[in-house]
Length: 101
Image (cartoon, rainbow, N blue to C red; front, side):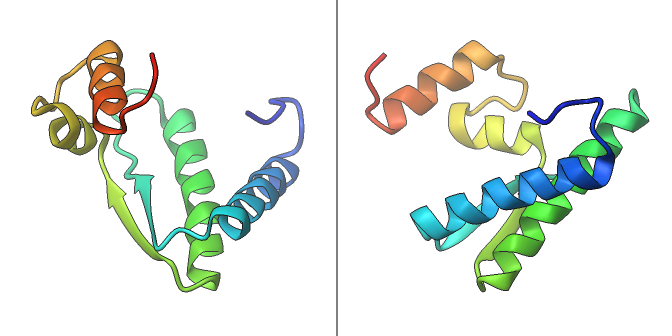
């Protein structure tokens, strides 16, 4: 999370720097980014979309495939239910990845 009182350009730069470091460290083959859809809070949707764009750009510079998915698509893929709550998603991700609880 970046400080809300910082200028937008500086917040996006901080996101870019962190993502680029993560991409260089972990070298993923593919990246999934949230596809923004919101009828309720345009400011939140705009900020999420801007951050997603910065992330997609960093991936594209490294020739990493990028796929955009809605939260309900991810929930359905992980739990079988596109309306699953956070606890259900957490439980399934923990099982799928064999993580300690």
